[in-house]
Length: 261
Image (cartoon, rainbow, N blue to C red; front, side, top):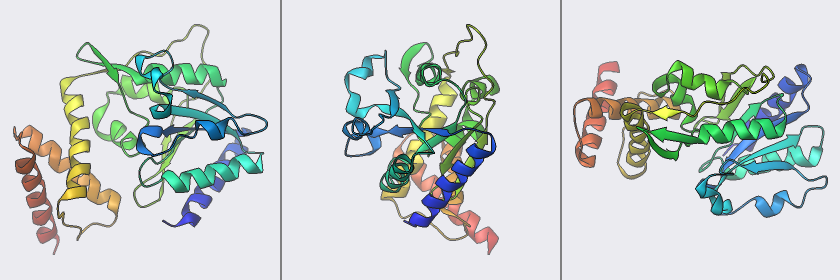
């Protein structure tokens, strides 16, 4: 991992916030992707950091060490900024941070993002793990409808993350102060949207356990997108078995590389 990339990213975020007269930055840490809890560290800061579990009020709140945490840091505090850089370096491979710039009061922002987490799938309650930075960009390119995207864009001036190549990603939001009594709308996922999310998981597992071609791609992000699109194609063709789906994707990648030679 190139630690310079992460430091440069945080410095860029700080400068962008300064340009719009914001002195704080919010980020989401998915604790499910790490083997330690940051909650004890959060209590050690003086002045204390502002943070909240995005499972608050949900049944999953009973497991705080596994919950996604929304954390706000002061960019004017060198210790808080340095901690953010060190944390981002530590979790980048398994739980990359998802950062947002929002002028909203913290409690209002936390309530909104918790409602986004509390989603449904064909009427059944469930958790929507939009805060996984590896999934986040595909929600807007492949999965969510425009009105669903708006729920995530509403509280943020912008979202940012580091992609698999440690390059900054950026999604513009809306970010204007919420109207009186304005409430977030729970996101209801259809079967096809749920299947697309599962295709992301399938692509990840395939890259972990199978010998997947890596020639002909300009970046790891491009390679993953090709695998994801291959999984979507396998689903469209009615392929169910894991090996059948993976073999199909690998075949399409080999064909893609051959066509570009």
